[in-house]
Image 1 (spheres, rainbow, N blue to C red):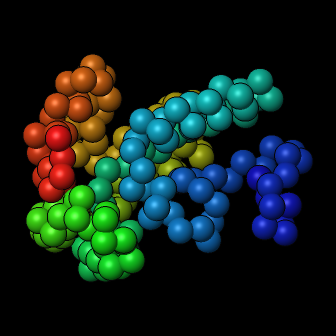
Image 2 (spheres, helix red, strand yellow; image 1 turned 180 degrees about the vertical axis):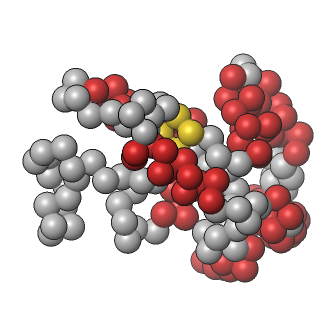
Length: 172
């Protein structure tokens, strides 16, 4: 909902949100945030707006080959952040963590799907169907990895992630 001055307003049922954040914002930042955070925010939005007769369909896509998932863009962002970090932060995390992260980002092209029609078809169905679904999960990575992980106990997901990600240099 927008008041055309860049702010937020609550006039009418002008819900035109198709993704995280407002159009024009740096949406790659929100995309990198954890999905559980987004689920909580969107779930709350969905429940709150249902009192006003507004149906909210949540589209949670996996990784698709776009500018947002470009390894060059993400690597440059990580490198810029690393370059701006204080010496204490660099010492705590270590160069090895940066190198492992940049290597993982470089392999992002292999897991990203090029078929953007999966997302646009979900959006079309959500906007035009008589009975749209509450959640859409376009992409095999979401269906086979992220969705099952969302049903697992948190401690199990934490262990899985801890085993796959590199440890900071000064980790306990």
